[in-house]
Length: 109
Length: 109
DNA sequence: TTCGTAGTTCGTAAATCAACGAACAATTCA
DNA sequence: TGAATTGTTCGTTGATTTACGAACTACGAA
Image (cartoon, rainbow over all chains, first blue to last red; front, side, top):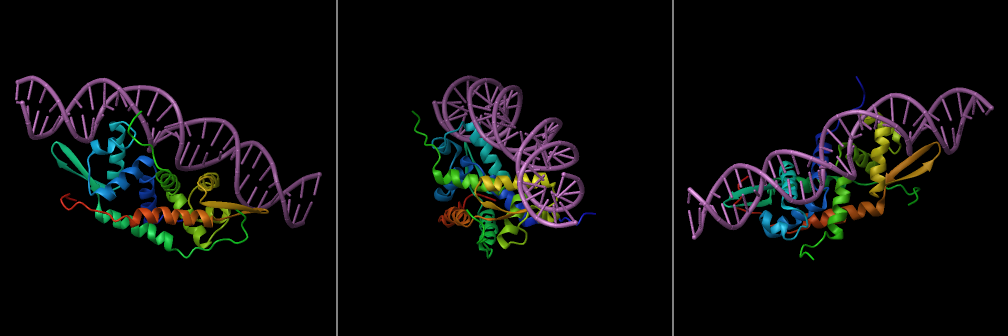
């Protein structure tokens, strides 16, 4: 047995969420959804410069991470931010940011 | 010319930083450096269950993203959080989180 | 039933990521 | 000078990501 610990749930969750936000397309999607309640792939593809199929894949990743959700409203699918998950995102990153950080004075930049 | 705009600097910066935090090993590193629990690769490798070479690569990624910095203090290298960059991280994510989000009531979870 | 719209999935190709051990610097200490 | 320590780089192997157009599904409207 090793003394090395595995990762905490918090570390895994932060990593998962950060990864989901780790691409400009996905950041753009989230920003858009945050400011306009919900919208459709078609709307996004007018603004975000990638193929619709690519956009759809990015939407899937955000969905897999739980950050967004889609509701079928034929013939379209309405995407929006998942309220609960977004609260979790804020809370997890908030914890990290509120860490009373110790910066190293002797380290040059 | 397309009417589609490219990505804003903010979107690219957030994505870059989020990507850097998008792995449990790197989250663990940042958490330790924030509190200066460990500052040397050797210390970290006693806690984080990956090979030293792998750890070194993760440190490089965080360094490339500008989040951490290393100072040579022979025979070791002392790592720490880059104060200015960390402030930027907080500010960028802060902006995102402070967005007055409009959640869609009609979307089921 | 046929057409058009909205979005997903498929198939493919290139690039990047993640992981490991081995080999390699650089430096201190004996 | 030689040995030990610290950390990086190399070389390799898979897995994952990103991107695109083409093909497909699902649905409402004509």
